[in-house]
Amino acid sequence: MAHRIGFKCADSDHEIERRAGRPIAEIFAKDGEAAFRELERWFVEEGHSHERLVVACGGGLVVQPGMLGRLATKGVVVCLHASIETILARTARHSKTRPLLDVEDPDARARALYAEREAIYKSAGTVILTDSRPLNEIAAHVARVWRRESAEFVRRLGAGGA
Image 1 (cartoon, rainbow, N blue to C red):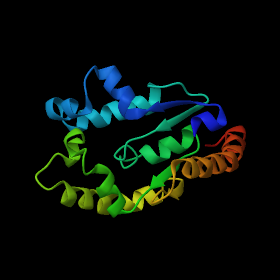
Image 2: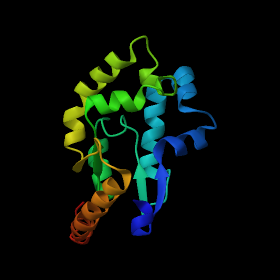
Image 3: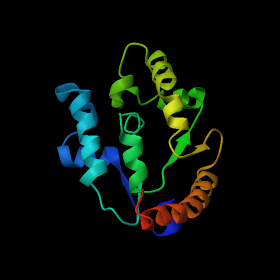
């Protein structure tokens, strides 16, 4: 997506790991989820360039109180959404590297998180379903949304509100 529109790309989780000098799983294990969420807030506020950047966020970032509104002041927000079945298939082999899923029953935990977060995800900007869609099709859809919504975002900024 970033390549299509000539922007750079940053992944919040990768940038947090780089800043902390350790993997997210270790941050969760040693410092707890609250410390990780604080690092996510740092990333949104000052942990990246603020121009011509596509940011990939982890699923827990947008559910923090006030964060969705804050993101909307920074640029166009697009939620890549998938069914719980797709999420379970995608995360099945990676539960040990996902601290919230590194539990006895990762499927049950994923279902509970999905139930808690789904309404927030669906209100997080334009929602694009990713189930059974090729990556190039998803990227093209995101690019169309960005082109449409970025003009409105710039108008809001010019009018003094975002």
